[in-house]
Length: 458
Image 1: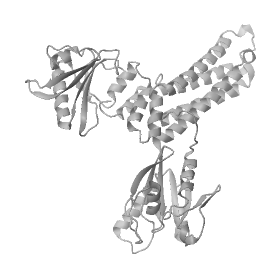
Image 2: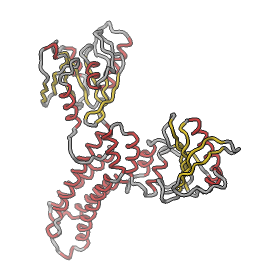
Image 3: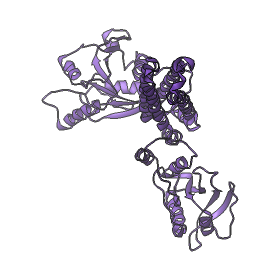
Image 4: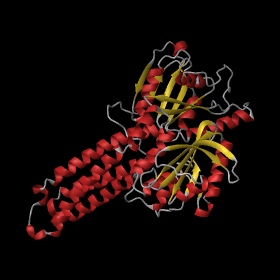
């Protein structure tokens, strides 16, 4: 990706009203912009200067702090100017307009989404994994996700990936040196303990993958959809999980007409619990309820986990079996037998290869802890003392691909020196996959997609 060095500017704080707001500019030779905005004033590098922000005609727009960070010692690696004023949206728009006006002769333009961080990446201030962690830290929905994003932003994830790359490169050097000097007749695999080195790389990669997969859960969470006939207690279960009355509960069939979504946390993992309209096929249902049922099936199609609620006091029905038959393949389903306070059952759970059956009472909040534990099990969450990296799906894909190439390399290594060329090639492919995580071999089009999803001003 080619670095555009033209100066850019944007509001760097979130939309809305706040105590302060920041307008940020970055680019080459911002000294001229500073001269245009503050004639006769010299801003000391990395010091805050309290100063009026004036329009072109001299009227005061606001008063605040101006800070100048000469490159390369700045966030982007370029000259950076930040104006910290009051956080009213109109004031910030006026201040941004003034900055763009003053910088017009310099080619100053409005920044694209994520362009400041993209420049930081292209100027080697951050690698790609760290740059993505910036957006993840901003978007973190739980404390655990924020801590893991901070870990990645500090470079912890990148360091372990770089270490894996270095180990793979060292092994490649040994293999390719042996290929270059076959006349030496050295038993390469035995003399250099190549198999042992490769086993160590694979084991280290497995550890990184486990931590990254756990971190991905913190970032992505799960979409959990509540499904069942009317009046089986879906809304009551949503309220029990949320710990608040977020859904209306009545004995009237078809109370829930549209989805109700509540995000909760279990062990720091965000779960989007989606209550849906009860499913029934009565001829007498009205148009609104029918639309609600159609939307229910739409949510089921996007679910990571389906909680199928049934009435433990009444037992299963033919309608329940029709609902089960329509569930998408491959999505975990927990059959929840609700209302055990009426049926006389005890809170319990039975996990089998076919289905998980869980007995609880949403009304009395009996067995809710069993459900929370089962959701964590389905998510693959394991409580560990290790630091987690807030990985993205592309990181997991790259780690899986690298693992596959290393496993193929291990197979070639078992054939002694007969497949050294294939051994070396699989190591190279594994190295490329690992390097793509930090951006060393990442295609420009992928970089464009990644940074376009950042907020403007970051």
